[in-house]
Length: 447
Image 1 (spheres, rainbow, N blue to C red):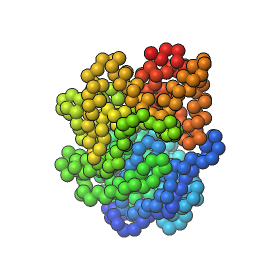
Image 2 (tube, rainbow, N blue to C red):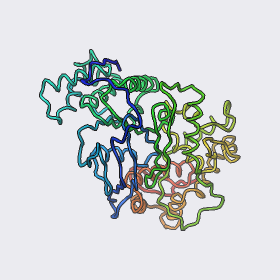
Image 3 (spheres, rainbow, N blue to C red):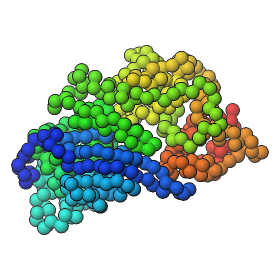
């Protein structure tokens, strides 16, 4: 991003946190109808002030309702109950003064950079000349000067995301919402774009008074935020609000910042998942959302954790650094390893268990045996599928039979993800087979 202070028609004013709320969320509750009937509760009792001159980072695991919350604030979704106030007025539908940058670039490939940016101004009903001048100013400010006539296919991922930022800033938003705006970029490009955004924010060059950004990257939240809001899951509720008082600019290698990152990890994992020591009772609900953690990644993670430099124990920030470029969010992987008793997650650390060490040291058949035993003990859905197959004469059952059960309690998307996860785990453990074309489970070759 290139800083041109004259590009935006207002006097630059460095943001001053604490000067009052620009937006307020009061008792926000959001449900979605389920295909099987009833409602799925996604957000519950969300109360939050977004203050003038403040960057707030929203952290939470997948499925916690982060993106849903942003869309409610933007007026793209209506809450089931509660209300959003923007500059003291209730939000009903898209609100002037609120801009949004999405994770995907969301550009029209047949439009030039300038036309894509101008597109965001059409809803304001501005005269054509003013719309063009605003778009040109935003293009210049965000570092796209010279690319006005280029098409998205000619741009790198980082440049395409700049177009998204330019389109959002061209409408002169007082509140900017960012939905994982840096996560689709490679590490170096994301680092550069974050730094330039913070420079423009710090010297008051942006026409923005407050920022709420969704991220799964804890280090990014500590680097950028004045506060971190942590959402729990099932349903999404605010579990922690963590102030970040470090002066800007912030150095990611600063020991104080690293300690803060570690502290946030610790707070997010302060309530570890209990390890079940005995087989799960048959009465335990099968419809729980499973973390999307492919077995090959779990095995690779355990091997990495077992070897130098970790030797069986690592701080979560170090693990996040290791997997950031290829995996993004690592919490589902950590949750799965903890669930299977292969690693223990607590107080910001991940530790290899004795069972995890046995898994790493075993051959393929030994690993399958360990995994199969834990799968039956720790995942009610897997043992339920196997039990149904064992009791049927033909030892076959259609996928839809289990999908309907899950959708009584989960969204369609979560039910689908959970089924795909248990299929992956069950195949590896040779607990059951699955025919994707016929969408049928069976015991045709379970061992």
